[in-house]
Image 1 (cartoon, rainbow, N blue to C red):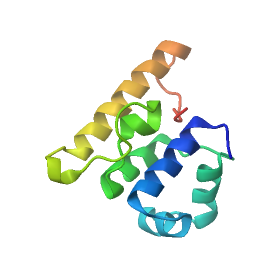
Image 2: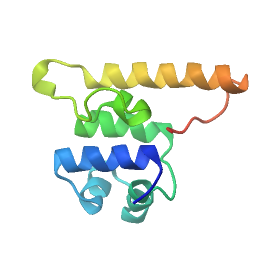
Image 3: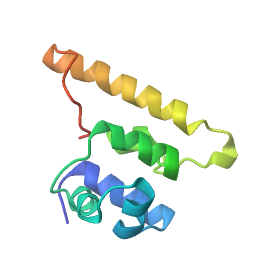
Length: 110
């Protein structure tokens, strides 16, 4: 098992939704080996993948980034997942700018 917190959280989301790496890759439109690297912690997805996970699967972007909150947001509860993903991306970029003093860096989840 990976010590990478993001990969552990991604696995949790996949388990809750009931998807394996092949199914997740197909839904997101990325190669299966890419998703496997994310799940096993070999690499981390770009921040844009967070938005896809949120919008297509109902994954909680804040949970994926920080581990806080529920792994999956139920659309039936009236939560606008796209807005939540945009807020998480915005917060993440602000934190990144604070850490490295640059606004042009690419952020990857921890």
